[in-house]
Image 1: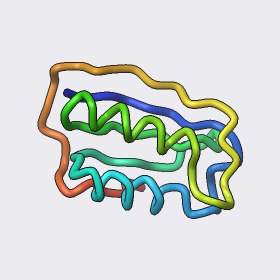
Image 2 (image 1 turned 45 degrees about the vertical axis):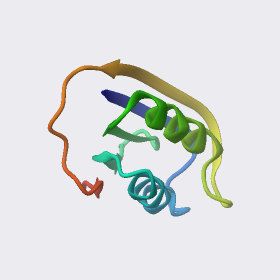
Image 3 (image 1 turned 180 degrees about the vertical axis):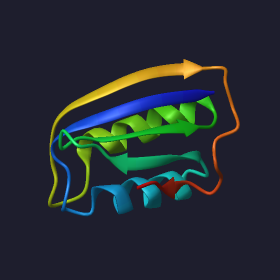
Length: 90
């Protein structure tokens, strides 16, 4: 299963992308994450549906110095073939 996400709030310059990679690797998810020009962080993740739901919950909390105001989530989708291990894109 595959899902797309966009996280809004104070999520750039606070280690949010590294946090996403660490959580995704802990959950053995494939995918990617990147900063967006509008100040949000976006990405895609792939793995079992229950694991994606756990990932979604962690994204909504974020790391200690982030302030997540909104999490946009679309999925699950049956597409596959995202990079594994999870990576940061620029």
